[in-house]
Image (cartoon, rainbow, N blue to C red; front, side, top):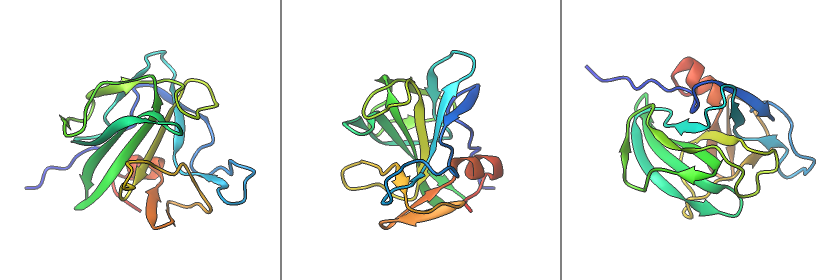
Length: 164
């Protein structure tokens, strides 16, 4: 019998602090929709947890995303990646195996984050060669493909435990 991994939000008590998946975000016509959600902890606990069992595909820093961690998962037979960025601290390294609920970092304000301390959280079908990530797309829905990468609505994936 296959084991089903349950996906959950990366914080214990979260709230969306702005620009949810379906909200028009940027004034730039080339990238008007936010391809993830920005979350803060409503309890004050800033620990970021793995959304499900997986393997750390990347753990690093870049000027756009600051400290970021990308986890590789299998959902309904398909490989997907959960992406966590703007953290003040990362606590896992590439190649580590993690269980859902494992602490992987601390919410921060690194990289180009301008909304204060928060976590940008997203699901995508594959990684860029650089390990990077686009945070914006030109259209929205439960899933959207942009420049060859498919982004999935985090709320849809977690609420339905499947890909759209």
